Length: 306
Figure 1 (cartoon, rainbow, N blue to C red):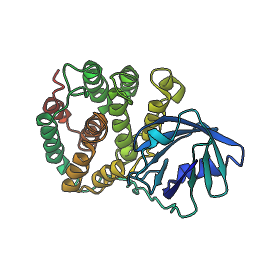
Figure 2 (cartoon, one colour; figure 1 turned 60 degrees about the horizontal axis):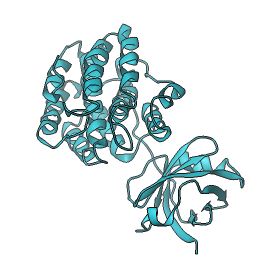
Figure 3 (cartoon, helix red, strand yellow; figure 1 turned 30 degrees about the vertical axis):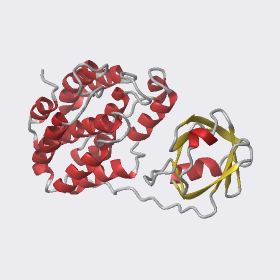
Figure 4 (cartoon, helix red, strand yellow; figure 1 turned 180 degrees about the horizontal axis):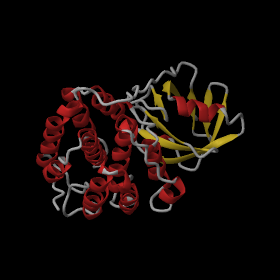
């Protein structure tokens, strides 16, 4: 018998992707886990269905404790009907009571007056990352992604202090895509975390966002991980990452430390990897704004020594 799942929230991008599909097949179910599963739409958008409370523009949040990997099968076709999403013969998602509001942080046009004081917050978070378990993350010297992550930091991030360093950053960035084990490789998460913070605040230091071509990224990693990286570089992010952006934009150092710490437990190492990229981006932006060269101190604190 099909299961009825009741949605309590649907993100703006998810709602648009489903509503523009009409009544035809809107996509298919991809990977399933106990608390979540992914959908690929006919327009090649990635949607995330979860019974957890974390919201994002691509998320459909379910008011249920169902074990999805026992009830939802990969490859099932997805059809959108009025206020319903049908997942083959397995389940129906009822959208009739879902809310649609998700306002992301407004991005300032210039650095916060407190931007200069961000160094202490970044050092504090970097210290915490050095004392917690970071096995198999980009910070693990014995991990698969460490060498590429270190090269990205030294050969990509540092040259980006100058506008002419963008090509070096792009070359180093592409080399980490697909590096590491797990559902989303550590290199993808680190690069995504960097781009989410850098692109959201680039205009405050008179820089343009850096966006990688999705087809190039997709050729180096899984489709799902590539889409998640693509969303992060376009600053389509969930509430946790948005809180990091908001704290940095407002120059609220205590909130910045707390919001980064909140990210750490995500996935196996994803939260640590995303946070590492975010820390590097914020340190670099601070250097650009203040014409300083203090990112080397953060690199050393993280274990990325020259």
